[in-house]
Length: 409
Image (tube, rainbow, N blue to C red; front, side):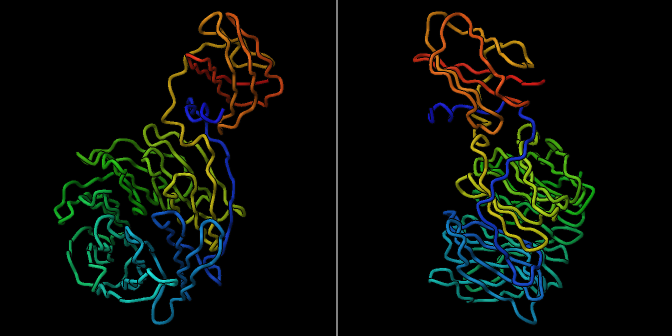
């Protein structure tokens, strides 16, 4: 049955709670807020950067939860606002609140600081490492976007980007575009050489996060206006606005296939949305009603990491059904009654064939399995199912058919 599950997905699923905590660790010894989290490219390590004083940069083993590296940022430096690996994980870069970029060599058993790049700005709250070159882009409080070479720390580009602080930066996967967000409430799309291509107005609060889908088709932004917006990369046009959070969107990330958005919010939730429709699929609630301040998606799509205001670094397992949403075929069978109470009548697609029937809940978990269903129709007992949305998969040697139904009593 495992192979069959891989072809199954949602049919307009309502958001559900789907919380499986793998582990939780503190990212700072004095419980300072987490400002940034990042996975290594192979998913084996997690980085976190925190508020001060003192600020911490920590690296954890994703599988064992072991603390592999603990770097305390001492005086005269302040908070760590962003952390990240370069594409081959040879370097780690961290942006410090006063505009200094710490560059670490990550080729040994423990990262070693090799350079401190001084941007010359009063503050810097965003930085991202290029996916195709060993460069780091830094957003400055004076509205400039500066790009430095990791090796040697030399300045490559200095772009007058926003009228307010550059608060969020993202590269496209191929490195051909840079996206910035600012305290002027705007998202901007640039060429890699610093030519402004599009300005995207529409948010009514500071931009807190920007990401580009892996196919370079869309830009996603989050803001203190509690909204997420999706923009067309080729035209800069607004595609949709996603509402649902009851507080500032503090950070966003995209699933590796680009189909889903994860958003961290002041409202103490991390939510997962379907990019193509804006539908909320899942909500992860942090215990204690603590604001979620950072989020990152694992490279293999199966996990998320969140950071909180009280320094809780939490690794979550994602429900198996999440990645199946976009592989879903259209429902091909009518069933009745729908909503159902105790039974369900199914008109089988082809009389005379023998079918296997599987019923799943909205998280993709198998709820009922019948090995042999035949005839022109079938009456299925669903009295043991709780109220909610369910999906059916009928399989024969030659065919597969799907349906959706609701149990309501």
